[in-house]
Structures are given as C-alpha cells and as structure tokens.
Image (cartoon, rainbow, N blue to C red; front, side, top):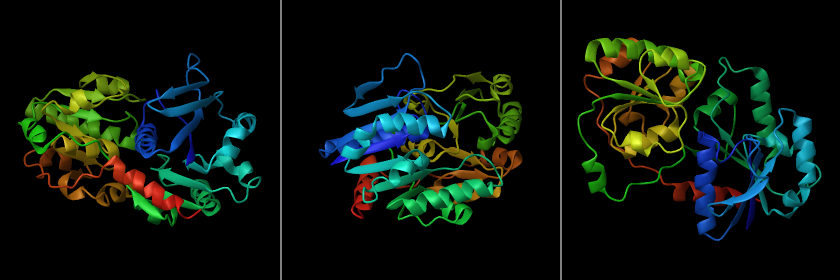
Length: 325
C-alpha cells in the first residue's frame, strides 16, 4: 500500500510523536508498504524532499496558520490523491478540507497524548471529537482519553520499544543506581516544578548527582540542580548508566524498563494520574503525586516485571485499523 502520514514534525526534529511515526513507518516498510511523511520544515536548511531510512519525507513551508498549511497541502494534492491510506498524527485539521473533496478516501487518526493544559479547554475536546468523527477509524495513545476527551477509539496503544538482543544483555546492565536522570521536557505539563522540589530534597538526603535530558522553560532552574543536556535523539547512552530514571512519557518509560532501570513518575493533576495509572506497566513503575511521596519511594523501588510491546506489534495494530476502509 501507499501510506501517507501527516505529522506536524518529523525527523530530525526530536519528540515522542516523531519517534512513533518513524518506528511504525520502518516496520511497515519491512512489509513492503511505501511510506511518505508530510511534515513542516522546522529548519530552513532542511531539503523539501528526502528519504530517511526508506521513509520519503516531504516538507511544507513552516506555518502556524491553518490557511498556510492548507495552501501548501493543496500544492501537494497529487501526493494525497495517490495515497491508498492517509493517516494523521494529531493533525487531522490539516486534512479537513480535503476530507470533503475525496469522500471515500480512507483517512485515519492517531491521537497522541494531551495538549498540556489542565483543565482541558472545551475547544480541545470538541476538536478531538470532530477529528474522530470524520476519521474512518482512530488509535488513542493511552486509555485516559476515553474519560477526559470522551473519545471512542478503535484501538488503544502505548507505543513500543526496540528490544535488547537478549535477556543476558539486560542482566549485564543491572546494578545499584548511582545517579538520577530526568528525561523529558522541562515544562510544567511534565510536572517539572514538583520534580525539581523532589530532586532538591533527594540531593540533600542521598547526595546523588542529577542529569536532565531535555529542554524547556524551566531549564534555568534545572541547571541549579544538575547538568542539562538539551534534547537528544538517542537515549541509549543515558539508559545504559546505572541510574534512577524520572520520566512521565510512555515511550521513555518503556525504554527505561527495557534497560531494567527503576522508573519514577510524578503527576500534578488528575488527568496525569489517570495517564500513569492506566499504563500497562503501572505495576512496575513508582507513581507519586507529590515530591515527598517520590522521595520516600527511592528507598524501595518496585520490582520490574513487565512484557514489553514491540514496534512490530504496534504496526500490526495500524494494519488492522486500516482494514476498516
């Protein structure tokens, strides 16, 4: 099949949606499908078209205007028209006017996470429901969306992980944690204020060094507690280090568990609490609602007992969804 993914950002931009699109796309190419990704040109130096790991990338001029995006997509309408499947990653509104040009063309949507605003604005809920209603089918990344957005997705997914070579590889990485590594955006939608309070107490009590793998508006305050690396493409060098991992995104949690690392996830509101507690591996991660609770969990982290999902399995979910066309 000729599959077209629409994603606001893609490689080399770093983020969870970008990783998801790349991983699923690569699995689909292994099965003989032709994958094209239409995305925004987030850096001026990037070419308009290129191929990356067998995925064809088509970049639109950067725009924050829906009219600008629709105009750019109209100029690429032949790509849309020739696709057997169009799959939107959050950005269904990109395709909205074309939905009525090609009524019978199969279009699907994956909803990734939440917008970071709590309580959720009614407008955001309305946009989700409209996008879901106009799609042939949908995937939600996390079952929490059913409650908080009133969505009725065809499938629930939590992403996947690239497994290590063997169980022996994982055992070789075991060892007592000697540091703390926070992975994620340094913004309040990641409960960074609460994490910083916990890390300050931990440094005073346990004398453990802290590394922040991420970037955001709270970078300055994070730098007072430890080293800040900025965003990185590959987390492997950090996950191989014997460390406590502080993270709240599904993909990062899966990857940390794959490396047998104790994971600590802190929530700052009821939505994020549901987000974490409904995660399939919730029984293997240390979930807390305050800095004090997180500090107390360090003494005896939960044992890791989990079956890790693969990207091959996630790709199969997409194929099953597309059978609805």
